Image (cartoon, helix red, strand yellow):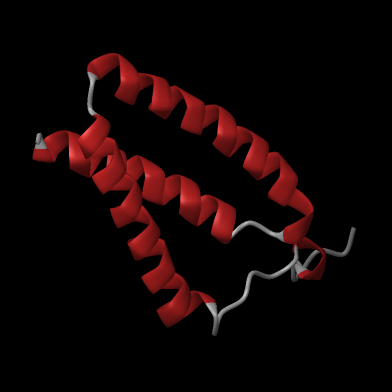
Amino acid sequence: MDIGIVLLLTAALTTMLMLFQRSERKRRLFVAIVMLLTGELIRLYIWYRGYHTEGWVALITAIVINLLFWLLIGRYNPVGSSDRIRVYRMDD
């Protein structure tokens, strides 16, 4: 098992899951579609190179990292809405 590939795949999968987890509700469908396309590219890379074990280890590790992030930070700091953003000192 190549640890460099595991770290690379874990970083990519963790980023994808984190983007989906922290996206606002109105944009979640778009993020899911982009995530599916990116996930398909990652899956094709794993199959083409034969990194099946590394892919499963990276996926499980990414899920655990995102679950820990949600338990420790995400539950107490929910994603805000872009409608609630106010810009100060804008009179226009």
